[in-house]
Image (cartoon, rainbow, N blue to C red; front, side, top):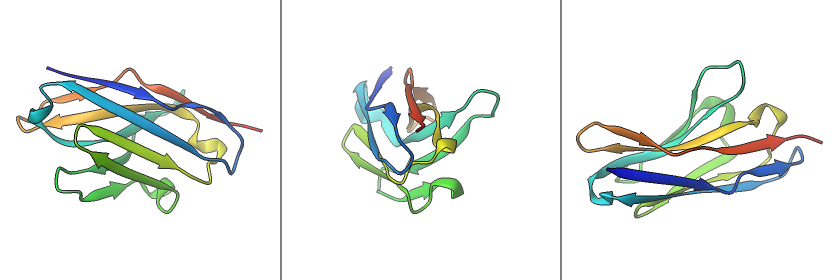
Length: 114
């Protein structure tokens, strides 16, 4: 099994920045890809950013140019700049194993408000 723990969320003003971190533990050698998704109240879950084992990245259109995903072994990060109120959501870290199984963390709240 794999466990994921997110940190770094909080309250920030529009235009500000936050850096989310996610640490994986357990059978970390079975992890292929990692990434982040988010969910706001009343909205569907949305993929935010994805990074493969080889470092290839994908971003949702609303965050392109503002968010950057990076990875260091079993840790994944999301640098969020120029934050907007519509970025407010619970952000979840996920891992995809080579077997295709998915795991995710408990989530961290990001609130962008003046």
